[in-house]
Image (cartoon, rainbow, N blue to C red; front, side, top):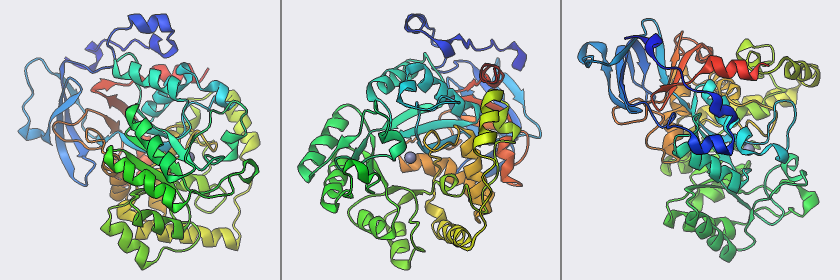
Length: 458
Ligand SMILES: [Zn+2]
């Protein structure tokens, strides 16, 4: 048997209605047949590389990974000969904002089940197998989509959301909070409210939550940062419920205070100064994970790579969007002034000092970066700033999963989910080769990238 004997996936579900949902077959739960992916370079996600390897998959789970010579092909298994290709784990993106982006417009009115589902497929198209949406999801809509994904009625990247807590009036940047229909964040005005809120969120089944420590929008009365006694209460209560907190914080002083009070995950590196030895010790001793979100802050700086002329981005969005991006984004020159150079150098320095703690997150959906594509830009920025391609891949797969206790993804090992990307070229030679995607498999099922591309490029 070969690939062509596979039944193509039914993609009508991408535009599902609630009626269609009720009748949908279990298409995306996983594939029950055995498949073997043969003669392929396997980058396992934890640093190991198998040059002539095989991966045996059944029911969406990896049964075996190893040298091809040691893994027998079971009778009846579908065999994929992947000579010359490279497999990496599907990426794990720990910081994005799903639901608001409409590819041509943006706002809370687009936070629908259909649009949220579309964003999960956008990530899948680009080889992102797991996505954590941080603090901006409308929770009832999100819960319905998550449930349908668990039921196997929709595919795409595995969806995790992390409700957000902030000081009253605090929360995300004004782009969200200016939206008159924005549903807001969970306010935590004092330690007692922090304890109650974490318990409430735990009771609803959340195992990841976000806190905004920075005061983002003074106009709405959020002059106050989240006070240490409040985030201490959040962090301590979260421990009791096995809830993982990720903190938005951007200064070295706040980072130190947060680690000292129990925080282990950050959105953003310290941007204000170069990190010092005290901080590095704290990070190492406490196994802290950091999403640097480089793409967001390097757009006008020397590290920025113009994106909108890259076919890997524009072949899956409508021509009208490319036109508007060219008008709105490209005329802005890359600023090469001394201050920008200095900030980039500081960021690169901090990134290298923290490189064993860096994880993947793009902030896509919030700041004009686009789902999935932004992940590959982030990988490239990791390497441009001095990480090796191997380190960038570990950061974006196994370490990102580990940071949130997502034990089944981010690594290619027996017993883990069959979520991986087959590449036409070796990303260890050039990290931009992560864009040479041959196929993506999630839950052991091939993502219909051609069908998605057709749908999106209209
Ligand atoms: Zn964000």
